[in-house]
Length: 163
Image 1 (cartoon, helix red, strand yellow):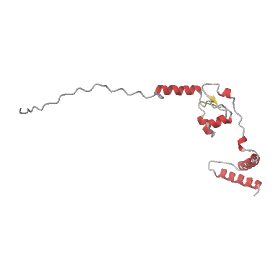
Image 2 (image 1 turned 45 degrees about the vertical axis):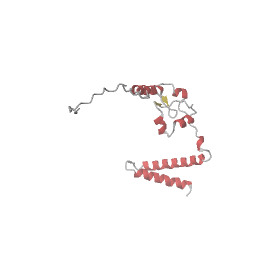
Image 3 (image 1 turned 180 degrees about the vertical axis):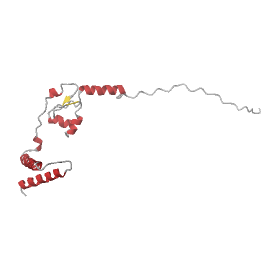
Image 4 (image 1 turned 90 degrees about the vertical axis):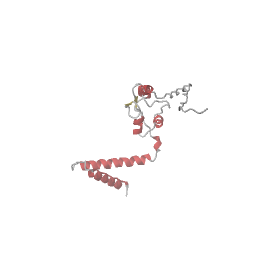
């Protein structure tokens, strides 16, 4: 099959699957519109795949949503370089985007000491840990007293031995 027939077939299959969803209530006018949209998207995907074949996948540039200085300006939150939204901790946000802290720092050319947690949030957590006594070494056990218990004399049964 050539590329045009393949995209038409895929668009028809996608439209049929869309209509097969029982939660979709589409009128007759929406079906051709959806089919055209699917065909256009598939054609666009085909053309971008052909263009991507010439370059390598590692050349993708990610423009930051904010500057490094602005992302660290507040003590209560850190602005994400991905979407510019404030977060107290970037861990879940990065996991949602499939990144680790090291990949995030590399993607936006950040220093290795760039924080992943807001300073005030980190301080709150530290205060809670101190209050709970976490991080302290256990106290040394109390030394046992050197005094021995008083020895009680043996009881005599009252039986006398002949002398």
